[in-house]
Length: 210
Image (cartoon, rainbow, N blue to C red; front, side):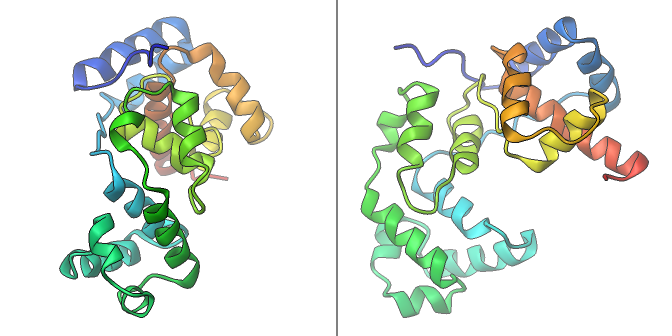
C-alpha cells in the first residue's frame, strides 16, 4: 500500500499551501496573514519519540533542561538509556510515569526504518501500542519525523482553537468534529495543520485566545 505524498522541502509546503488556499477561501485569508509556512521536519527514530515523552505536560524550558542532562549522560539513544538504572534516569529529571514510558519505548524495539514505508494509519497504530505514546504524539511523529503530507492532529488544542476562530465556529470543535472537518483538506492535511498553528499565533497576538 502506498504511503502517499511526503513533505521533504519548503517547496512541498508551499505547494500544499497553494492548494489549500485555492480550495478554501478562509485558508487563503489566513495565509495572507501568516506568510510562508515552516517546514518543521525532524529526524525520525527513538530519539524523536524520547523527546516527545520528555516534553509531555511540562514547559519548554523544563523539557530543554532535562534533555540537556540526558544528552550529557549519553542517554538519548535506546542503548544509552538501557545502560542507566531507574535511579540514574530519575536523577536526570524523568518523573516516575515518564521513566515507565521510556522503558516501554525501549522494550517495544520499534523498527523505525520499517515505519517509513507503512501507511499513516499503521504508523499511528504501531506507535500507540507503546505505553506513553498517544494518538497526538503518533500523529505529530508521522507529520514531522516521517514527513507525511496528509496527517492531521485534531486532538491538538491550538488547532481546535485556530479552527474555531478561522471558521467562525460557535465553540471550539471536538477532536471528532475537527477530524471530520479536516477531511476536506486532504491530501494536504499536514500543511493545513501548519497553517492553523501559524494562524493561531497571529490570532493570539491580535485578540487573545479564549
